[in-house]
Length: 492
Image (cartoon, rainbow, N blue to C red; front, side, top):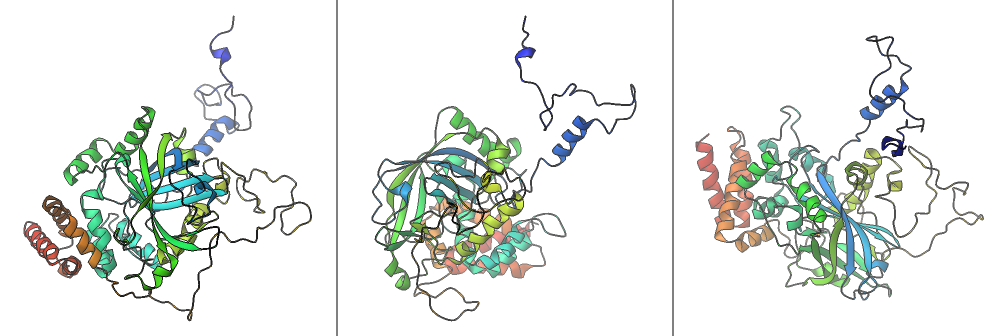
């Protein structure tokens, strides 16, 4: 008679040999020392020691799900991307949400931007759109990014995030005023990943079949509605359930409550960019909707959870350099830096063959190139030649660039971005502040003052410089913040 255990698969070593005893280490006699010949023990311990890869420097804490993008409007006048070629067309996707500054073990319910990294598994290769839940960012040039992130991370002496470092950098970087207003407003702590908007944030290029090109910005508007947490609610939730956002997303999909987003784009004719009232490639600014109204192009639905968090969420890689025909970069200096930095980070963190992993490789087509060998290479190319051009039937180039060439002029150098008629670091921050209701303004002031007041007592210069940026955005904004900070610092 067959027992239940006899129907189960046999436990094996990594090499496939059956394991006789997985409960007891082999020893020299009963109670004696362990033997080095117990290779099951050493194989397990060696693998355990190495089963974590370096966490992401930023966006370490995250959750993800698979889904579907469906085209709802004809955009072929603007782009030749195949996955956008007809109304009703569906493309498999993988979306990873994350916080930015915290490490892998940090809580979800914290005041921090949320990453919104979306992979489209298109028939022309994977297209990655790597954005946030805010339409702008703190800085406009990639060379400042390592410095900015160092201020958000742990101080090299104290080992903690320091208000002195954060506000010193933000005060000396006035372009951050707009994003800081977003961050310390109500949307700074989303209630869940299902209840936030996503944005491509950068400006991208679309090119149509005729060769014409346009500048675009992406918007993903949550159909669940915007929901946020107050600072007090977040403090309580982060202590009681650090995994709150991850749990909410996973359990909603398990219940069949699939979250959806309405996908919109703003489209700027290429000729408009040169004389637009501010630099349209400046990541610290939005395009006002009255100038370029968003148009709906599709629907995004998340409907399947990953089966293994490490294999599919931790080892997933996203790069804004992953374009497909008809979509390309813009002169946005932050985007230009990210084109290198993201892919390079994954080569270090996951390995040179990270693109071969199931979550990262193309699902609707096949990657065909001559990049071989390296750690964890699986031999997929077999005997095929590893050079091009060759006369053995190897893959060949198309001769057609993925995106349109953009004219450039001038001498090389470390240039600031070109100045436009209304370029200013404070106008849009002030506009955002004035859009808030009185209750929203009060919470914004309280959130900012609570953090600024933590600056060291002997560094009033940092405080004054930080408040000065908000005063330049709006006089009332600065006055109220100054009074709130002064009161809190008196109490310390």
